Amino acid sequence: MWRRGVFWGLVALVLALPAHAEIYRWVDDDGTVHYSNTPQPEASQRERRVFDSRGLMREIIPAPPTLEEREQARAEQEQAQQELEAARQARADRATRAHQLRQAYENLEEIEELRARRESAIGGDIARSEAQETTLLRERERIRQQYADSESASSRERFKAQLDDLEERIARERAYRQGQQDRLSAIQQRLDLDREDYQRLVMDGDG
Image (cartoon, rainbow, N blue to C red; front, side):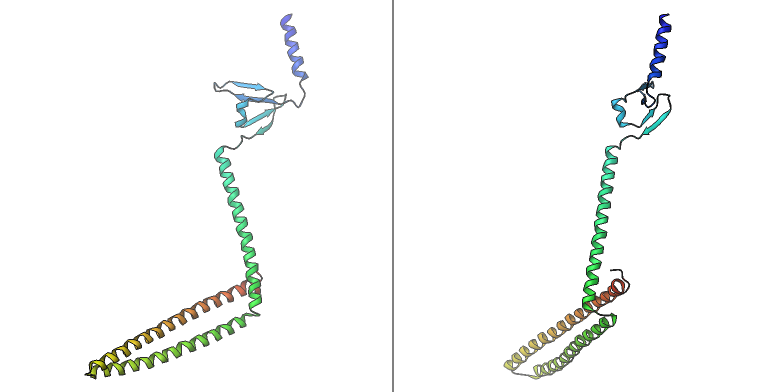
């Protein structure tokens, strides 16, 4: 009789559980399966399965991320933020560049006209320098001949000073032309970039 009373008491207790009561199932290190209406503390770091009072699985709670997974997620978030900021800055740079080009040029033809003027002006300077060097070279040959024909030490010394001066002037002309050629090359590269950006940012509307 006592056992029968205990049995029915247990049945009554189970039937009295609310329909939404949560039952937790876990397996200990010995492989024994346990059920409880409260989760084990150490289970918070593992995947959890929640059963209702009828023993049916109601929910699967995934395990929280590990330290490595959290660090990786943080790194990925920082990388995404950096890429977003880079994209925003790139858009701002394109808008600024497009505004500068609109202020500088009205159309592509104006860029080419500016190129022609620069090439003509610098090309003229280079041509004049070449002509000046030709004159200096002829003068150098004349002084060299006088130096060779001179028998006086003082005359030879004077011609030698003139030759040294001519060599310096010739070197300056050559350095000047090299500088002008470098300048022209830089201008051409800048105008090529201006033309490309004007077409892309202003005419095609990418800016």
